[in-house]
Amino acid sequence: MSEWDGKSKGGLLGYKIFVFCIKYLGVRASYFVLYFVASYYFLFLRKTNRVTFYYLHNRMGYSRSKARRMVFMSYYTFGQTLIDKTAISAGMRDRFTYEFDGIEKLNEMLANKKGGVLISAHIGNFEIAEFFLGELEGKFQINLLTSDMEHRAIKEYLESISSKSAIKFIIIKEDLSHIYEINEALANNELICLTGDRYFEGVKCLAEPFLGKEANFPAGPFLIASRLKVPVAFVYVMKEKKLHYHLYAREAVVKHRDEKALLKTYVESVESMLKKYPLQWFNYFDFWQAFKK
Image 1: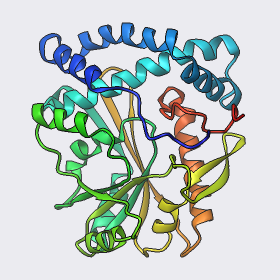
Image 2: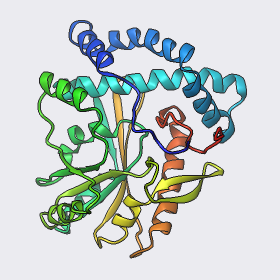
Image 3: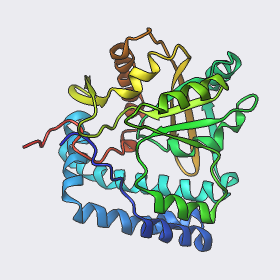
Image 4: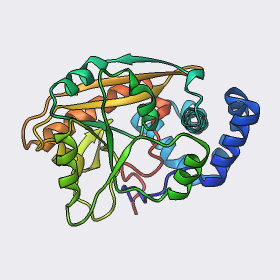
């Protein structure tokens, strides 16, 4: 299947192990422990290895030997982002450095008093964006549009050991009542955040060439963003070396009711990020239907 099954890598026990290491050993020492965790993934998760190798070899063009090594490094990098997210949400933000690229676009968005839509992807570490967006001018509220609530136990555990997140959740509902919540948030000059690279079976999708091969994307984010008549930006929080992060914000040119054009621009934006950060693609499923039976 090319659609996501609703399950992300990393369970509650894994988070507890990382929290213990971070508290008593520190972030960098936790990175060392991570080598053993990444090795387990590399040795035993054959299906995930296969789709990750396909992404790196067939879609990104790395040699077979280099792609195999990069599969391991992909798991290691993903684990680092989990450790960083846990540490930052637990109040250790001052141990990290960060830089902004395009933050003026987000300030302009808020200055228009119309709210705005931020579209990201499952690359980098977008979940920590709220801890770095404090550099924005004026007060703002982030609303995360999601249908993924399967990690309730993990969220509750993280909240028990960290400061409560200020992000509001807008849950996608079959009766479309979430549209009213979105409009209300925008009327209050709030930001709507969503991702555009995972869809469930039965949900309307749009097809677009991505890294040289057609792939399916959820239609919802692009339908919504192309119809709201508010500013739209693509935002990514990418991990650099050591404990450093780089937040990118890119303004999206949106034609009213042209979701296909918005998707095309989004795909080009994600591709440009992956060329810089090939190890930070964290969609560990058969995205291109390469192994569909």
